[in-house]
Amino acid sequence: MRAATGLLVVLPALTVSVAGAEESTFSLRWVRGEGADDCPDGQAAAREVARRLARDPFRADEDRCIEVVVARGTTGGWLAQIFVRQRDGTKLGTRSLESSAEGCGPIFDATVLALTLTIDPEAAQAAPPPAADRFPDLEPSPPSPPVIRPEPRTPLPPPPTSACPPIEATGRGVELSGGALAVIGAGLLPEPSVGFGLLTVAHFREGLGLAGGMVALPSREVSYSGARLGAGLTAAWLEASFAPIRRSLWTLGASAGLSGGLLHVVAYSPEPDEPGDLPWAAVSLAIRGQVGLVGPLVGGVGVRGFLPLTRYELQVDDRAIFVAPTVGGTADLGVGLAFR
Image 1: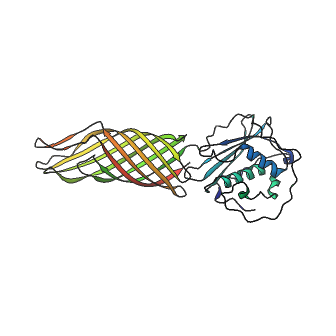
Image 2: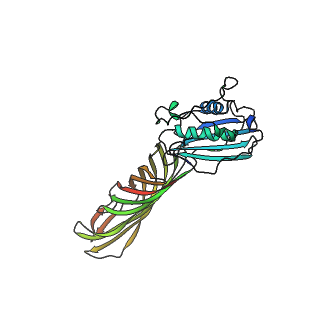
């Protein structure tokens, strides 16, 4: 038997004690999560399981329930979660499958196999049909030896709706990502500055979430309008985040919120002053793209605009040498990790 391309079992195998597995029945609930609308539905899965078992194992009024949630993975590929429980909520087993393939054919095949073995462990002796028969965009499998299977005793009806209450699962769960940034800022200080930052993003469901981070533009000496001064900025932000576009390998999102920090200023000439820290606040808006690299490693690029709520005019000898503009911003390039 050939394993599905790019498939990884990430949790221990699902084990459910089933007495008389040959005639065991369950109710089935199949959920296509975010990004999986074009994948096969529960009817296709139920019919494929029934074909492998040569009988229909699904009944609407069964006390034992199988729920499957198929969705896009956090950093690409596919995730399938399988829950087996009693109608009263007692958990009998769980399993999680992942596939790095571009299409959802391999994760569908692996999920069908897992369901088949849950219902009847001896069904592993039957070979599945080539994936390309049902998913033409997949690379055809090498031909397998012919296998004679008995036809179902009766035509298979559409799968019944599960009578069990739905499991509290979204298919993707909370997605966390974070990393370090190399930052260049403009319009925030007298001259463009280079610094560093940190970013953390949490998405909960439907692409909605929170983003938090910080940026440090270290103070450095510059000449501006005939004076020498040093200016730097340290700021942090908290923003509401929305990622409307999430694909198997990349994500594009936006966020908006408030930023606050300190503006560090010292004048060296014509009359040196002691360093001073001035409160700084702004409304922040950002657009960011993220791409999966290897495993949980991700890279990202973003731009963030700041609308200062506190604008300062820096003076030396009663002469203005810097007036903060109405808009400033940063561009960054980062690398980090993403987890589900």
